[in-house]
Image 1 (cartoon, helix red, strand yellow):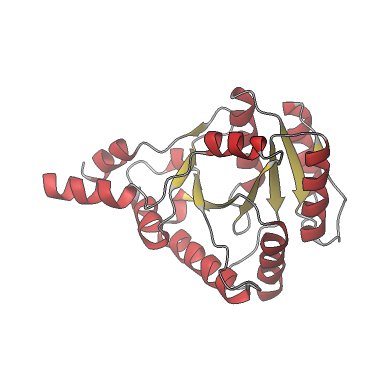
Image 2 (cartoon, rainbow, N blue to C red; image 1 turned 180 degrees about the horizontal axis):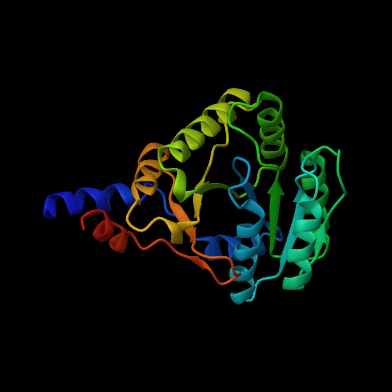
Length: 239
């Protein structure tokens, strides 16, 4: 039991840890906004959890701007606009049918001018095997060099989320125009309140990608975002 516990703790404690608040301060000192890009397949809750992350940053007295770079799905910009209005933060939008990479670039320039601390970039949901959309995502990441690429996955779907994450990384590596491809840095697991003891997906995702689970979404309000407690997950797994 102890050996199992230690092994699980070791797997879930990622190879690299990311301290967002510290990194935001470092970017601030360089006079740049800290840029986070949210990626994932359709319907996992990217926009909703982007708003939760915005709320979390606001609680830490940081200024946040949203960038509506899902220029693909009808209603996506309006959805983000609603969150921005509720949270009383600025949103950068250019409507639909635009190149999301360019929208993101303009948003970051705007945030630099306005001295925003953080830019949260919403992107269109895309299946991991949709070549044109994956190419567009790769372009957005290569052009804007974000500080953090967050993969939003559902805790519900178990190994399917592992497959998505794997394929996303693979595609980003294949399509990259630079020698060292930017891959996914961290994971946000949504719908974590619906899974009871099925936390295996979290384990596999961290193990396969080496990326930490940075947040878990566990409800529908802005406050329903938690840091992953590795010890409690191990306990749940070994129940």
